[in-house]
Image (cartoon, rainbow over all chains, first blue to last red; front, side, top):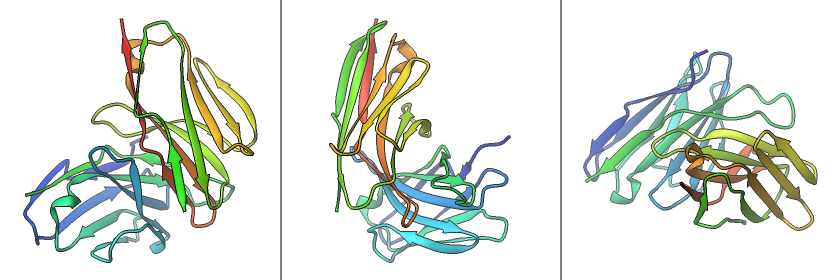
Length: 115
Length: 110
């Protein structure tokens, strides 16, 4: 079974540009989560999508947005990039929550560098 | 608010035991996860504790005390491949949200 995949592996942008990151969940998983892992910091929850809808959002400004497509893949868009957006962006997927929790499986991440 | 603390770094010798502590103060708690993350790789699931007590899984064990807001991950018979970061995360069912601590980097020396 293929794991969570993310593209691109690395992305270099300059301030004020926009970045688009992509994620494909494990087959059969309908929930997708996005996390930011900045250098020296823990994983920070960004967004949770399930069945095409945004279900929860972390403490990030509105310039961080995303969507989930009918095939459950997802995009994270970061507008008006700032230097401090440089981080590893991790995507995770899980089955639809039908019990107390569903284990999240992580992808390898996209390293975003803002110059 | 959410506050999850774990040591930044620990060093241990191959074959030894290391205990990584995690303390948390969170609004809402349904369980606690431990993940392992090797440098440059995705986090991988190690354990999930809901009830108080010790859960053993091979060389790794995880303990939870909900009343004390405390958990630990115990790594026994350390191997070089155990050198990685270990992430403690509190799960809150409302919002289906994982809140991570800063991670503990464990270095295993020969």
